[in-house]
Length: 395
Image (cartoon, rainbow, N blue to C red; front, side):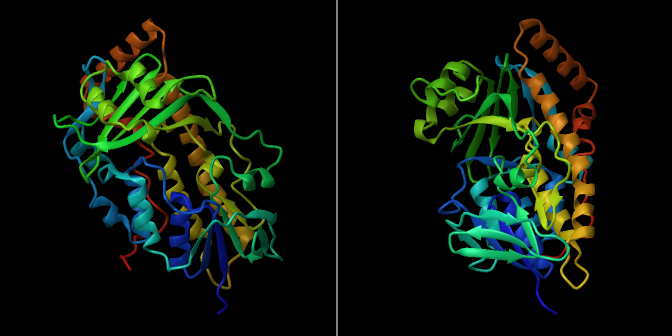
């Protein structure tokens, strides 16, 4: 049987997961990455039970779960340190079938690339879509080394996806969400702390432990697009968060100004008409960029990858006219709902008027007092998702 060829454009989390999933289903896979290397940004990523079950399908879920760092209480706080809501990791695991696992993106990239044969990922390899193909002809990509044909192209080329624009040139594309984010990874402070997310007026801070002894901290604030600190981003964080509760000041004291990552938040509030055209499937941020307020961006990309491989199984029966519309039908409604929910949650997070902030804190506290189940209920239908195939044993 002739082996079919899939080309993945983009070696981010979603693209690498798709490559592993397609390879396990018998495809010949090539990953083209524009960047010169795979060094990911110095930030963490949270993998919820839904994406862990997707990783189970490709035999990598247990490796991720081994990195779980926290099994106690955490929750939501006010800038002065008051607990607004408490969460229990055991209750969340019982409700959704597993823990939330925080890990460094570099660790996840290493886990995924270790499941691919050497030479699968080509760095410094920009690719342009020349022809999306159809039922009767392959898709074609143009690269500096020449043209590549493939039975399937997976467009995992990120939030500014050139392939998305080529497939749907009339779509309005991404929109600025009105906020910017900062991310840092630093050694854990000497004084203990519980993982938390703290909501202030138009600002948010989160501190989460990693199993390797470091801390992943992230911040978000309402800001004009394209803004930058007049001095450096650490100084900007000190101005915005320096007087917040422990461990925020200690973390900022440990930050190297050159290691602070700042990115404006863009999302796709207008859903695409489809996640495919011809023999090309869009995946992750290229298909459904969302605000980070639910922590589901990378999780949904991993789901996409496994569902796409499920519908695009190799063999004589592969039919893009059937497989890719089925992928769209599975993924478009789910991710559209999550994009919209993330936008609503982000709007609540970034409330800045004092009366609105006070009301928000009171409501969060009231909901928490009725029981942790009410707080966790916001992730029903998200974290409890299950893939359309049975988990595979690790290779």
